[in-house]
Image (tube, rainbow, N blue to C red):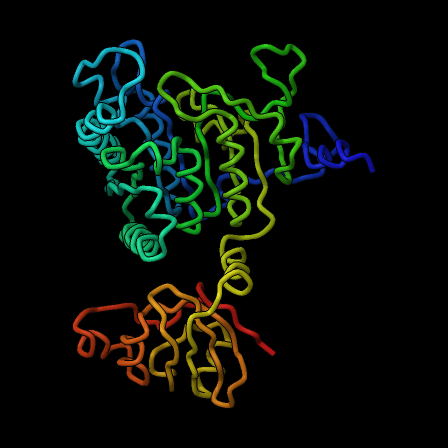
Length: 395
């Protein structure tokens, strides 16, 4: 088969048989949704002011999803743009130190803006600032993931942004599309919505090509899809379609569906729910399935937990591994490292990510979860290995 044809078999232009054959999901199908908002949508570049009416409409959309018992997270740009407006900095490219200082001022305004917009609907906002290292370095990743999980348990809305006050040109993401994809995978979200200047992916630049066709569904990101992406962004945005396609690769590879939709309309999420034009990037599996595949085949185990027969049966019934069922701890591993789990006969039962360092795991093995705080001096997780971080051989 011709390679170009093969690549494009995963592209579904509007009106094509492929587009009709693939069922388009609905917003209501998803339990945990990350919404990314760019600077150009949030800030009027001419007036240097917040687009308050638009933000109010988006907050209403988020509140509607939240009211349906969905977990909602926001990845928001805008700190530098708001900061330079407050400081009345001249137009043009800022030096790195000027951007960092503007972000320091803008972060306060951005956090207040989201807090006020969400509070009008009875929602609590929680600010989370991250850098590249927070999603790449294991311990910091786990800390950020735990913070986000706890905020969601409390039914708060995490508002996440790159920490521009400390990021440098060498380590910063450079755009919030890829940051949003990393956040979505970190949070095990099943949907990421990228609100954009455009209403999705086209097979050619729509502004310059009259015959450009909108692509409503992408079943797999191929070289042909990547070739469609341009790199142009607006004055306030560091991203373009190219970074959105890269975000789609990250997200769908981790089991998260992704939408590129227009943010140029009021109530943009409501518009998507009602069938507004957008582009769906379809994930092959769920976030949990993708995570378990990664645990099973991509991580090198750093230690071993030997468990009793009762724990073996519990794991095979889909339960988490509690400290009480652990008979022996071997190896030198840190919190979040992969470990092999063996039964009392030494046979491998599965693999998982341990919630404790090896020394702490050694101290609490064989004990009830209720005793963890007394033994360690702090309240850790009740599970030694949570079932979401566990891959079990059920045979």
